[in-house]
Length: 314
Image (tube, rainbow, N blue to C red; front, top):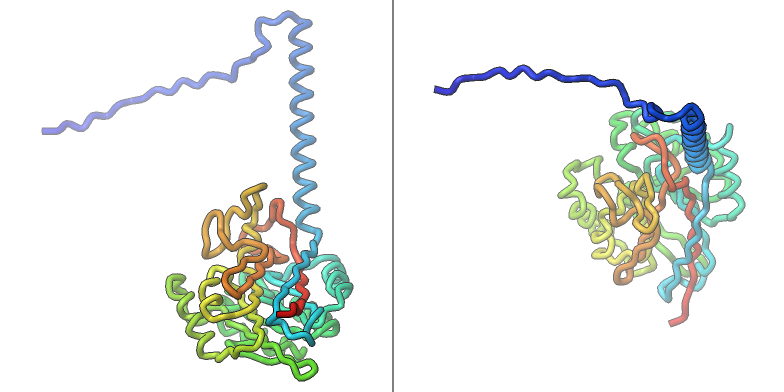
């Protein structure tokens, strides 16, 4: 028969050792002086680190890319696209002047917004509407949904109607064509998969099926989508250029390593920021502008992406 034994454990709590005990009065004063210096240096470093993070999160950067190839129509050589992603109702200055001035300075031909314009935890439709009202005055705006729009539920329709009144082109698994001098490119847009399927293991095949049904033609194609983790689906569909976000740059960027973690990719995500190429497909992943669950970025400032198309002769 097993006997249950109760063992009383006594814990001895000792005060922190005073390392200055046993020192002469002169040495003790020297020790305390050095201790104060170390504490002061530590506090200064902590303040500098905090200041750097605050400044890093409050300053928007601009990253430029060139998408070159012989499939780019010559009429679209120099065509400039601004990509904004994961804004999450972020606001820079009183009226987003910092963001708007950066966009306007680039004189884009088109603005692409690749999802999470609002944050589902505290959506501010008025703030998002105000930003888009200014952006459509700069260039035609094309918009696709993100997972935060999917989380709005029935309220999303209200938000979409607000954007439609501003003449924002909302692409729900659709393809539109832009023409210049009898030459054409295609702008395709995918809804976020969370609207129809929340199982991540099924989302990539679902998006590939959607792209097949959209009948993207052989003309040069640009895809707006929120999800970079489904890159294989875009490659298999023969898309030329993909704009996406969602990863927030990995939230914390480690030197020589990259992003620390991203939604739907976990730790050390492969598609966190920058340009990725496979076969004829290039994908540009924006670090985004705002924050969501994690309120700060580290070594990962908000980002506007500017892409210039370049025609190359065969």
